Each structure stands twice: as structure tokens, then as C-alpha cells.
Length: 298
Image (cartoon, rainbow, N blue to C red; front, side):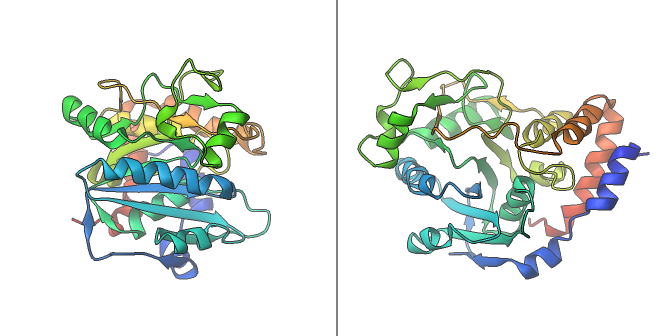
């Protein structure tokens, strides 16, 4: 039997993907093609970060021999990112939120994986984390070396933080991301080490095997990434990108750690999952797998 807490949450918050798809807006390019990787960015607000993030992605893709797509999924009341995506011919999905509804990052990530372009793997990436031009070269060397199906796309369980001055230079296009490195003015280690998310690569089959992300359990700033990480580790392994080492650079913005009014309940959900034995975890994972299995493509 699945733990009662999860049964209740799944019943109360079950995601109707078909209905949401009917109500959402899709602008997808080359949808008939299959990509090696779909780089999926969930967004709400922070439109000023859209250009520097996308530009850093383009430079990295240019140095790669892979076929990589870029998809933005916006879960918001107003489609702020639609014009930028249209101008740059970026895959775009808008999931309309109701007034006062919390940002559902999990739903955005699942939508990008399920309803965007076909791909062999997904990379779920935060809008505020810049990549350098050798990013994909290094990432796939790590994947090949470790023979893994899931990997955090930076090393040391930490991203590097930019101060406001350096962030402004990047946003204003007066500094290249490739110039950034730890030790220079404006680039520092985070206050806390151990980030479980930020940028996660996962093989398509493994994503569907673990039931994707968990919009039924988490919204706003929540333990959704560590929950996803723990699900991966239940059936496979989650590696980190340390051979060769990859750094990501986090643009500065006001902290939002404590803005979720439901954080206590969501933390309880994660702690309950951590307390389950392996068969108990697998039971929940199989239930989540059944919810999205109809959208699997070979």
C-alpha cells in the first residue's frame, strides 16, 4: 500500500495533463524531428535573464556536434516570455495560471518533456544559471565516462554566484560568460553547498520510469529537486559533473527561499518519502509512472 499521505495528495491534486494541454498555448519548431537533447527551462518572471541565458546556451550548442533543442515553459498569469521566444524562434509553452496561484515548476518541467519536441534525453535547467561555451562538450564527456542515465550538470553540488555588478555586466552584454571563474571579483561560492537541482540531465526512459517531476506534491520554492533526485537514486544513480569539472554561474536576484506558505507541508512530504523503505518508494514511483506512461514515445 502507498503511504496514506501520498494517496491523499495524489487524489486531491491529481494532474489532468490532457485538460491542461487543451488550455495551454504551444509554439513549437521542427516538432517532427527527434533531438539528442531537449534543454528545458521553466520560467515565471525574470524576463531580463532570458537573453543572457539563451545566448550562453547558443554559444555552447555551437561548439557541440549534438542536435539540441531549447524549450521555454512559462507557468504564469501573463505570457511575459512569449515575445522573446517568438523573436528567437524558441520552443515555447504557456500554461496559464490563475490569479494568486503558486508557480508550479514541476508541472512546467513535465510539460516540456511530454509535449515539446521528441528527444532522447532532457536537461532541466534554471533560467538564472549561465553555461560556458564548453558546457555540452564537458557534459557528454562526463556522461560517457560514467556511463550514466542521470547527472547533475555541475560539480561539487554547488553553482558559483555572481554579485549584482557582474550580473549587470552579463545582462548588459559587456562581459562574456566564458570570462567568469571562481576567484575573480564578483564570483563566489554559495553560502550553502549541496544543491540537488539547478541543472539536471536525464535519459528519456529513466524520466518516464520514475514518473517525472511531482506537481501533485510541490509548488513554488519547495523540495521538488531533491525529491526527484531521491526517486532517481531509488532505481538508478545520480552522478555529478566532475570529470571534467563543470561550473555554472548563478545571476544575482533577491532571495525567494522563504516565500512559500506551504513549505512546511511540502517538507513533510519529502521527509516521508525519505523514511520509506525501498519497496515503499518503488510503489509510489510506479504510481507516478502510471500517470504519465500514456505520453511515453519510443
